[in-house]
Length: 218
Image (tube, rainbow, N blue to C red):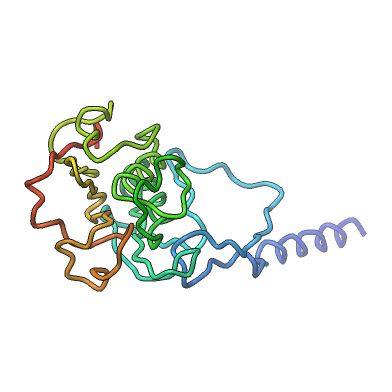
């Protein structure tokens, strides 16, 4: 009798282990959070690996070191070019990509992202600041001309993973090989007509007109 009971319990546990709740399936057409999903949480979960980053539901990844673009819709239903999170990049870089993915597709808004970090739209410096705040590399938003002298963890020159280009009128960043910019200048891709925060494939042709800095160690 005891043997039968243990066998039945083991079978039940094995069956439960292979049941995946339908609500846990990531949204296929959005690069941001799946706001409708309410996945069930298991009673016990294994602790994440050291340095692991939790990827929001519906956000795509790549096993390489460089981010790659993909087209989709953001939480507002706007067309957006998201970046695949590069799993072999440093944690700060992954977090910067994830943060930027949450606001791409939002409209351009002068001063957006400064009075409040979570805003309905973003300007150029608000966009770059949002990504760096999400990465833990910046505490409060900066203006475009402040990145080269107010950003305390910055060093002059191009970074291996993150480079910020700023002057008195504009700022953008290149993160894991992709350009995060509210301007479509020099963008020859399908995102050239889209204003506001977007991931763009090419650097600007006027990049030499900007002061170039990067976070220490990145």
